[in-house]
Amino acid sequence: MQALLNTGSTINEGKLAKGGNKYSEEYTKECAVCWMCAEDYAILGCPEKVAVISRDGKHMVAVYPKVTEAMMSGHVFIPRSIWANVVVEPDTFSTGSPRYKGSPVTVEPTNEEVLSAEEIVLKLYMGGE
Image 1 (cartoon, rainbow, N blue to C red):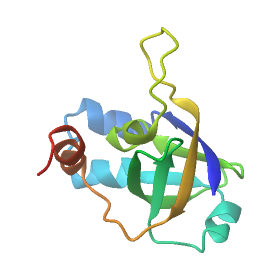
Image 2 (image 1 turned 90 degrees about the horizontal axis):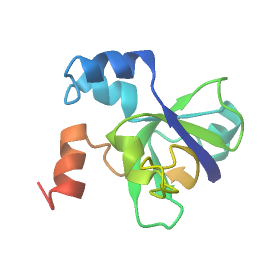
Image 3 (image 1 turned 30 degrees about the vertical axis):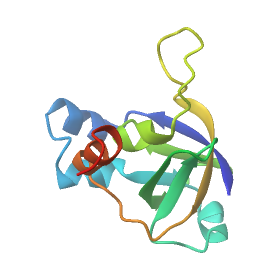
Image 4 (image 1 turned 120 degrees about the horizontal axis):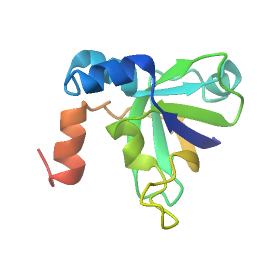
């Protein structure tokens, strides 16, 4: 399914991040999620986990779907976090800030493991575990 990815803070994400709990299970449960509407979730087959894939197909992150009436069909949301950072558009248009809103992504069911923030950093940015 093609979708537009938006990211941003949630109250709990901010509380946990500012409190120094980015490696906690609670932070993973709050941020390793992809909000979507019930219609899109049903189209995907109601999976336990989804892969969110960058427009160029080079980057993928596995997260848990979160069905909510807050989302319109064709739009998904991942709280501002390492999970979102894996797939946001890197273009800054000379602003120094990546495109956190409106990044085209593909969302599909997956059996991939949902990694913790620490595991993502080790795997993607440190070259392994």
